[in-house]
Length: 234
Image (cartoon, rainbow, N blue to C red; front, side):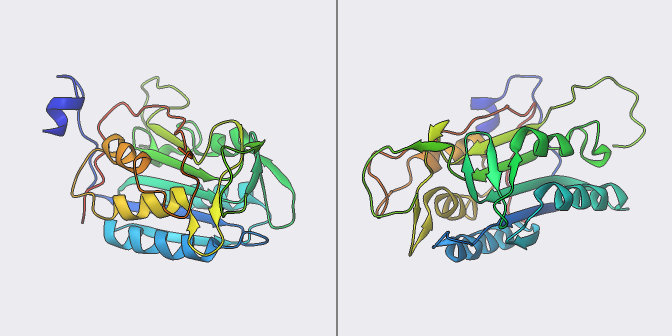
């Protein structure tokens, strides 16, 4: 049904039979509720059959992402897709490590392009950023702010970028329950049953906000994948 509703006759599904990998960065410094997000993501990734590596309180995002990429390229088995999740303080196009050093997101994402990560050429890459992108608030709330391929392909393709908020605004995080985006994604994705990821994100946007701002609606910034990415249960 999803294929009929969302795909044209030439759009195919990604092959998800290989390894599913995830790298999660989480800065916990002055980010109350972060542990709840770590727990929620672990439950989600386990339900979806992902191997998730957690990097707690990173100082250098780029160095660890380069290592993650090199390990993917060195694998002998097939890799189906990868998720990269960044939970940190941020401002516009920058995220801050535990040492308060800033890292430009565009520069960071460049480490996972088709040019640099051969094993993920033509494979879905999902980037999720739970971080502020400015200082403006939406409303008052009880939260603190394949190798050897000779074909020509775009440097960036098969990538999906999801931000917790729009440019210029804070990303809300409840001190007891964690951040709204991460909690909502965990609840929706772990019950995905093979639905297309864009359908899942639509449900995420309508997830009950309960202890969060009633007017808060994170807006995913998306480079749409070329094929249907179904987050199937293993």
